[in-house]
Image (tube, rainbow, N blue to C red):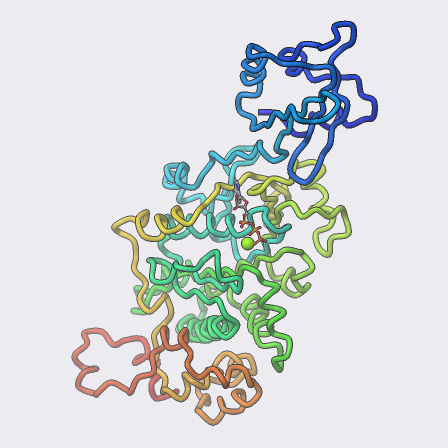
Length: 466
Ligand SMILES: Nc1ncnc2c1ncn2[C@@H]1O[C@H](COP(=O)(O)OP(=O)(O)OP(=O)(O)O)[C@@H](O)[C@H]1O
Ligand SMILES: [Mg+2]
């Protein structure tokens, strides 16, 4: 396989040099002159070498083929002036063979090391689940952001059964069809659905806060909570990973809606969610799509090639270092990782991530989970009941943001927020909200007593509060 950079040296004008593999396979038409590369053109996807005074027979073709064994090339004899053209794809050295399905054994054997990021110059790179927190991801279009997200999520679904994943993807292509698979919580592909998901997560944070406060010295992390919960007869809670692809579309959809609906919810989740096991991964084409509030709350930063030299809004020097010293190139699937962990000496890593297609994703979600895997009821959310009106008002998130105590959260209080949000008010048929917290009438008293263990809403008396 040829290294694409090797052709740059033939691009100098009047270069009389000729690559070895050409000399070995071509013979000169005029034996008194050498075979030369008249010109080397570099365009978006390929290098083209124009060979002068060269001819090739069937033995030469065989030699050429052998020396370019793993390289895709195209030989063109139709150029004018007797020149022969060889064209090489610039990105052909991609390790495409490295696919998600091929590394399942590696992932299986390394569950404890956390999320598999890819293969770097130091071998396999993992990011521990405890240090993962929130992350941003950016890079030019077509360099593998969505595929990286898919491989991360597949890894989580297959090997981390303490997590559930939700998606907001306003492009609506990359994560469609995952709904209903094990470990997948919610998938939103429209703006109202996105706001619904953020709303539900805000409510979930509030409910989790109540559970955490059952102890005088509350647990400091979700893992701590989960280790204490059984003794206190409280439910175990999953980690929620919310992946937002095409983040910029979500941010721009906020325009025209009073109080920047999605962004204010999102920034709140970024600030407090981590402690309750709610993590966000935000992906967009450019780093400047993220606000400084977002960047400061995201301890992990991933980026693919993004074609700009310097002048980055954030992490300027570290981004330059990824290009200069760590070998980040315009190769799909090659991802740099800025690790903000204070214990880590090295800050920037570059690795090739596995290619994860739809099939891998479905297989991870539905097949790879071990038979012992936990099944999270109610899409991984704490169940509670609301009246149909409250669900349709769908303003819980705004109420929580505004600091309304859920104890006082009656329909009237919610209506105030409903008024400020024209768009949401028009969408009374809220599919996502109703999937999670189904509107229902309080269960008859005798039914409640039949249960061996009171459900969480009963213990927190949610039905009477809301
Ligand atoms: N890990 C990988 N290894 C090899 N090729 C990859 C890898 N990831 C992505 N690719 C190639 O790059 C193409 C684009 O990937 P992807 O859709 O993930 O890009 P993207 O950054 O999300 O683009 P956009 O910004 O347009 O959404 C894929 O169809 C695939 O051919
Ligand atoms: Mg994408």
